[in-house]
Length: 184
Image 1 (cartoon, rainbow, N blue to C red):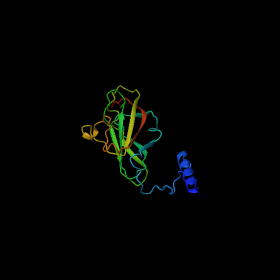
Image 2 (cartoon, rainbow, N blue to C red; image 1 turned 180 degrees about the vertical axis):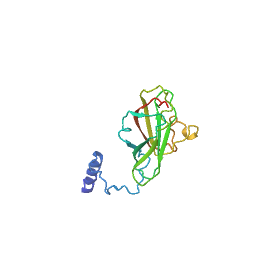
Image 3 (cartoon, rainbow, N blue to C red; image 1 turned 60 degrees about the vertical axis):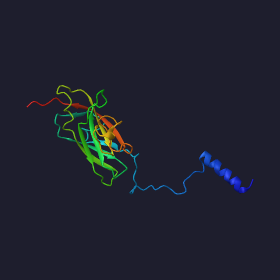
Image 4 (cartoon, helix red, strand yellow; image 1 turned 135 degrees about the horizontal axis):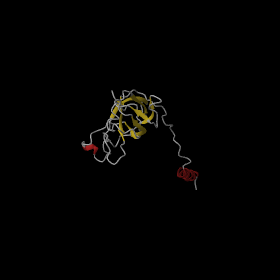
């Protein structure tokens, strides 16, 4: 066997077992203007202000609570608008629509803070109910659309996203309780 044939056989064996398959050109490790693509989900890193809104809760809210929930979200696609919807007890047999939403425009930074109102979160909960509920935030890099939109077909109720094949999203949950209304 010639030396070229021997070399070719050795290279094929090395490629097969994964030993000789290194890249000739190293990948670009700079964040720069690279689009992270549709696989880069926005991730909710933290919630505040502390200690009232930290994970996993419980968040204790008053009716018409004037405070704002601040969510720190990481999305490597710095050109995306970030959207968040807040749901109460979504996992029950009959899910209900979101009760609050917020968004953040691109800033050129991978980490952004979204300010979400909490003043309506206790509205679907009876005045006498001071039990535990699940507050769930859904963060997305695509705009939410109405369930009546044809593009919503096949998507979860009240969670449909524009361009679902490219949309990326994540969830974060807390335990939440609502105080009884204050009598005046």
